[in-house]
Length: 332
Ligand code: ADP
Ligand code: MN
Ligand code: MN
Ligand code: MN
Image 1 (cartoon, rainbow, N blue to C red):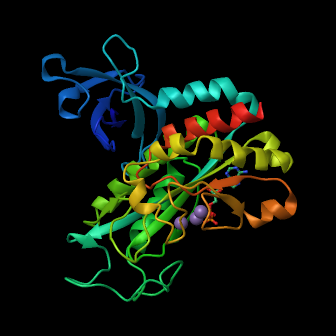
Image 2: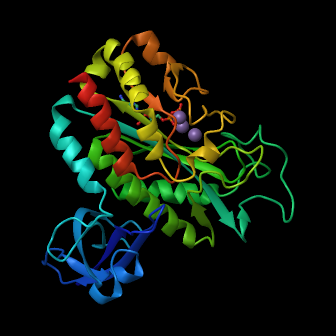
């Protein structure tokens, strides 16, 4: 029986790329071919020279269609097979090739907000819900909206073989988080992008949309981040490289913040469990610091660090490549 492959790619929209996909029917026994698309409709080509190339880089079972169907995450190439300028995966591949001997691992906490009927899911028409305080990890229909979507999404990620490691309801009503990892510098980007696609797709069936807007509601409401946890083999074995990693991030703070997602100044205000974007800091257990050393890590004198700065809308390929380059070059 022929089966369907969903070719998924990242477009060229600025300042924040979004996901696209289209379906190809594959004859049984055939490999997934490279394919093309109209780059002039995705900010990836001019109309006069519009063809761009899709090359599958990670193929997983499609948990939505089931059977033999697959999801094929693709990278975008020009017609001469060079990487398109929007192809940020290349940088992650290069960083891992250069520093793979240090065995870099990433765990990403992807926060997001559900929207229904044009407002955050669970918010009353034309007003505000009770101030935040009870919603984080809450339980009950007065505090939780969208759990059915979250459960279906988690089941889908597991069935697709993604390294999803947990979920929780967040501080703002309608806001949630899933965690992926720990996996390497390339696998983290592949997995987060695929998990994002599955989130949008699963939520479609509930007439709910998920957004990665880093500050969906202005005012006294938490933004949405993408805390990025990182370790190397040396950091997993002793404490000195943990401190060296925090110091290395401090030396390149401006470059990192500039690449951690559009609109980061609106989220990293110094309030709502963030450090101001313009000041770098690190500390044990400190959720008001740029980088947190978890308390168990300080006790055990080994483990990982949490960069709390990345926005929910950041590109995990870019973030993982940058952190690998900055930290592994300092630890080498
Ligand atoms: P938080 O307390 O900040 O909410 P979470 O439990 O949501 O933390 O997320 C922790 C993340 O750290 C998970 O994605 C997990 O996979 C990741 N993680 C755990 N150990 C390591 C490690 N040694 N290196 C990198 N990431 C790790
Ligand atoms: Mn978390
Ligand atoms: Mn969180
Ligand atoms: Mn966190």
